[in-house]
Length: 383
View 1 (tube, rainbow, N blue to C red):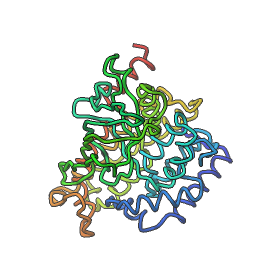
View 2: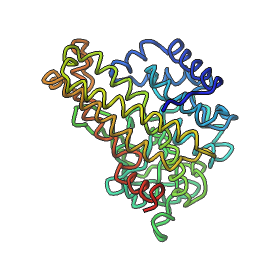
View 3: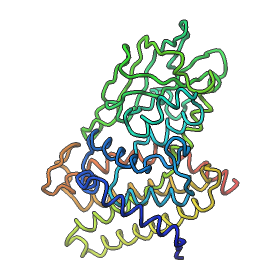
């Protein structure tokens, strides 16, 4: 089956492709295309380039920088960014707290935070998971207690991705311990330079520093930094996680990664078993791409389609499969690598092991694949 875009959507895709490949720094795009680590400054520069053209937060309300696009146009925007090697706008800003403030925030919060969030003048961190409240988020124990007009926060968050760069952190806290656990949670916005906030790095298996612990010790937070209703944090969290799952099948990035494997494999592609693995992955990615197009074509009201769970499930499996193929082809050349080692000599082989190890997380974050199978069984198969 071959799906064709309308002339208008085809022109839209061409316009996105031209912008991404001509206006975003070639150095930044090369860093992404070669699988090297982006610096904080590169991520900020890329997002500001997009934001200057109104392309950083197209799903936000138009008054705050959004575009009145269809779901298909959003999909094409996302895929063309990945294809071109343009860093996706920082998810914590663009897909998480930005939509939350736009929907639940006060007018003062919107004016203070939304422009800076879209332009990455503020780098947001996510303060959700805790050592005993990861998948069971409602069991969080970080507390916020009223003291005059302020809140005093104590507790710990973990797996805070890129928290070492954070300026502010949107944080779920327990504000009422007497009610059922989902009902006693609120969201606070916390300046990470506030006394009592400490960020501690967690070293990954590949030696990298991507995630952190964040500790709060008698951190005083002004009362006007409560988002939404008091004890309404569970509703906000569900809204945020729904936005997080948009674009969960990184077809463009995975196709780009597979193309890089083919380009670097050389004589290894003469092996019929290798060719068969590549062909199978290309076929699976085409099927996933067509499924993604069907999903966005049938999405309405901005709500994630139930089949988005299929995209998340299969998309992460294919991400991992391509990284495994790269690791297999790199062989012993992959073993000398550590995160941040960007040596140009046999760079793809040296980076294959860190990439493979890092992508073990893909089937866990954004709702584990086990959870996605349960959603599929209930909402699609009716089991």
